[in-house]
Amino acid sequence: MAAKDYKILGTGTLKGNPSYLLGCETTCGTKQNWELGIYLPPKEVTNPMKIVTKLFSTNLFVKLNPQTTEGGTCTGDWKSAKEPSKHKINITLEIYEGSKMIAENTYVVSGVADVVIPINYYGKYQFTFETNEWGEQCNEPKNTSKKTIYIIEPKTDNGGSGNSGDGGAGDNDELINPLYFKYVIASAIGAGAMIAISSIMSPK
Image (cartoon, rainbow, N blue to C red; front, side, top):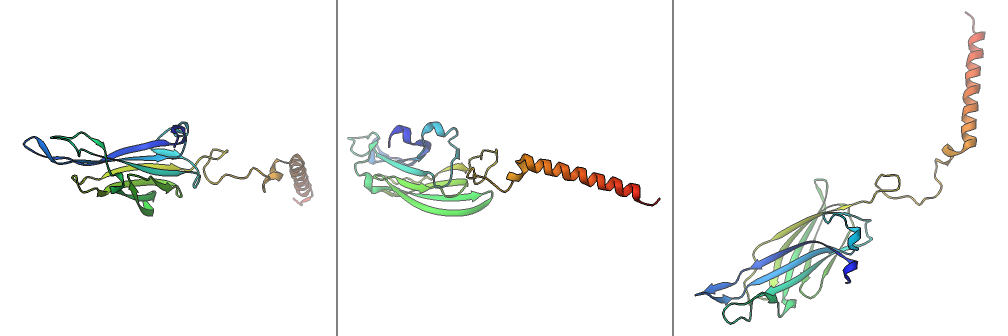
């Protein structure tokens, strides 16, 4: 992905700290660093929590960058995992319209392949990230992390939201037709004259 093709919306880390004995590391630590992004140029995302886009026009994605401290003599530094394919996290996505949950999906992302998530609803997207696999040589990440974003429908040309029209002629064309206005005015004058005549001819 080129930098201009996507925008990162949020990041987090699932972490298993190293174990130590007498100042030296006995079991290496694990970090599973995740990134949530969207395939849109950054200039089109003015607020990373509120994404204005049409449904099915683009996708979200989650990327996993695992790190461990394995390989040190006494203590190890955080470095990219030697076997990223053995690192996976579960992603639970709940989508809400107001207070009502309208969809729930689970995804698994590994250290070697991003997971793509379609945008097929408007509303609140609530993500929960938990470890699935961590190589098992190092300590397991125990924490969970969360991220919430909102997918918002673009405004139409008239300032409202909803499905935009096709720009063609509609049922209200006659309302902007000058001949129609002349007909309405003439009818109103005629109706007024008939009422006046009827009033004069009515017996007192």
